[in-house]
Length: 583
Image (cartoon, rainbow, N blue to C red):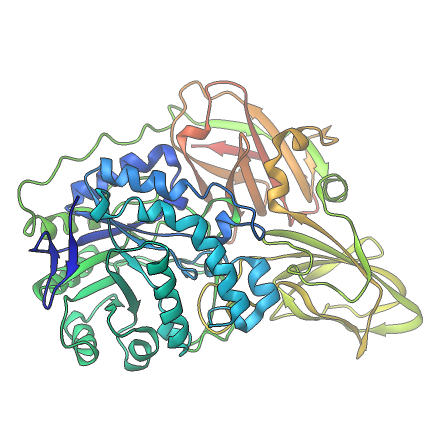
């Protein structure tokens, strides 16, 4: 057991000053079989601590129904086995470029802006979730012989709101549930953020990517005493679909790391190893300084230009950081662990079986909703997936513009069974007017819920209705196909696949052997946008607009024989000879 405390100037471990050299690694973005390797890479870089968020929506898909909440405890045990201390950031909100900032869709769908406030209904949900989660943390605190040194209260609340009474309620709940190690908050180094996001008696930390002395100066104006810590040193950045790749010079990042340490501060590298937003859990952001502009969906890869890349390999940034961190180590740094095994040879897989989108929806979709007003994804209980909206345009009437109000995020439109175009929030009006009578279908996909800013928790789907000229079209029927419907592999295998070298929107399937399995990347030929699975494990969304043309495949999901790959293509009408390649 160890006693970790917050002193007047330093962190204290059993009464002796200690500097935390931490790195962010999200257990939910790394296949569990690879936790040990990634944690060993952090140790080899010169870190003595690991930090992780906890995504509420991943673990409580419906109120009171929990999915693998013990994963955090297993990860903390792995951190201890790797010789690392741990910092836990349980939320309830986490940002993290994660779907809805970690808040469940069923929560924000019903509560709206009451989330992240002292609202009694919201806090009751938080209390139930924390009651399930926190025993794993409490049992692994440093004062009980575990690795956990600190626990965060909320996350960057100062960039969102001013309800500090809510933060105080959360801090009291953490204490009530047994958290005895120090609590902390983290915010941007700006006066309004530090004012809105910090609590008396709770350590305040700052998040930034450069300008350490100025940032810590701002923190000192609010907290003249206590240890300094950059809780998120942004050594890289995340990426959006259709945008340019993001990279930060290794030398520049290392110089900023050195500047933080020369201030006498502790640090948490965000990210030390980013990993992958498997299973469609990547979030989205909004453009503009106020984060109110156009939607920018986050890519599946969370490589983050981190010192340990998505595949677990050291980068130039790793070696530059290791050189800086070695100066602050008690002794020689550990050697790097053996690299992960990679796929022995490329494997091309023809996708020769197919189920069309309509049949897929009939077999795996929810019951049809309506007729009535178009429901949102939240009203249909859809976190990730697609909703088909159907409506009749009455007639006779002349052609009028068709507008999808409040569309989030992308819709393929069919008029009398013929594709008429694609709509987005920025381009919500169909190019060609529609005459009546006509049967209209909109296949709407969420590209990821906003994870940061004032539009956090906004609903998805056809949220404002469908206008023909200025007239609302009523009698809408909606049917959803949730992404987690594919979790039932036996049910997927019973789908009415047909053997073909052609297909379009729908589910493709192929089988293959991989005599020498290992980590791989999956490329897509003759396909545009959708989701991919290998042996029932969802790799996430692919999209040929880039910046990434492939998905990471953890070697543990491959077998030497009888592998199965599914590809749910959402965009193409016709594809001849589609295939995927494991490289």
